[in-house]
Image (cartoon, rainbow, N blue to C red; front, side, top):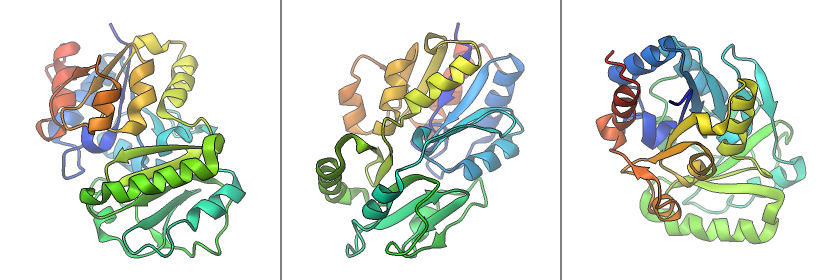
Length: 271
């Protein structure tokens, strides 16, 4: 039996409207009552996730910014790794002249963006987290968990693939780069991943990765899904993830609350 459950949020635990269903909240609360550790493992900002956790009234570790930040169940920061300041300055300027791409930065407690983006705001139904504007040519480059680039349409994925190839060529293993969705390309510090962060959490709990089950839908979930005792891929996952991990079980869609249904059956919860 697994003692740890780790789950991505967007495209996985959250509905397509980026909210938590009442059923999901019931299952996760029942899970904790059974003594099973639940861990949020997401690309989202820690303030955003902390507000969700508060709304759900559960204690849970938070892996945020794809592993660049880890907070314990009491909200204490237990791990942090930043993008190197000089690199952050250079990367933030990559798309300043590109009308199709929005540049975002998670710096400290802030979400920074270079221009208005109502599409990204639609992802924050469960929190009050919002962005501030910044100048990519003049901003503080310390305490940066991640930089990410988005488009307003999945059809523009090839445009971001070209950007990823350019960043790979320029920066190599100085940073970690992953798609969290077809329209979102994320850049963190070297060797940062949800998998490496989850290893730190289970070690702290006195458990092992084999004691863990994880759920995800994007390439930023790849390391985590590969490292745990059991990884489950969403039916709505990106094609790249399903191709990279063909041996893993594919469950239902986030539109059908597939994760809480799976957990309900696995742990005989019946909330």
